[in-house]
Image 1: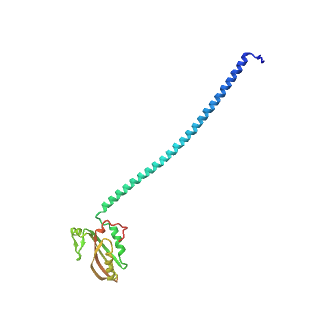
Image 2: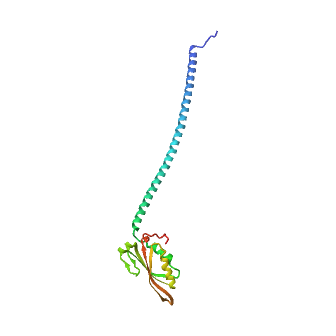
Image 3: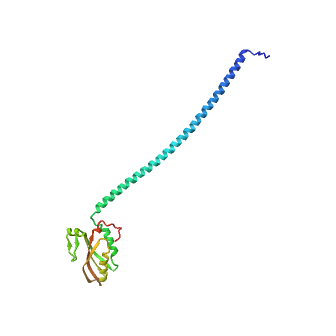
Length: 210
């Protein structure tokens, strides 16, 4: 038989202390659980924010590509407009830079030009007389080029006429005159010739081959 000689107040204080410690322990455990949940939520939120930033960066890249494609579309439209305008400006016009280039490519090595006159809307007949503009249009001719020059002999002049026929847009090469003369003590053949321009000579480009 156990006899408790302690006053009842002491036992009550002990029980109260045990209950207090138990309550504190439970509170600590609950706080630890809440803290763990809160930490997990923070980690998850950080992951979500990272995913959002990654998606935003991807969206920004895609938007940049879309903007570039729009810029390309605008440039293509501008190029098409420019080409259309250029084609309109060149329509029914002779691009003389291309014509002069073609002439430089077919001049024989021992023949030189000292005069060249180009006209649009006229062409020469077999007799060397110009044709009216209306007749030129009906014949498919758009103009004429007249030449003056000299070569070392008649063969060079004949070669010159032959080569003119090979130039795109050049037809009806005609020799108006050819005669021997002296230039600075050298005997040469001076000549005048002409060639008609067909519709193929319209809107010529300097890079095109004869």
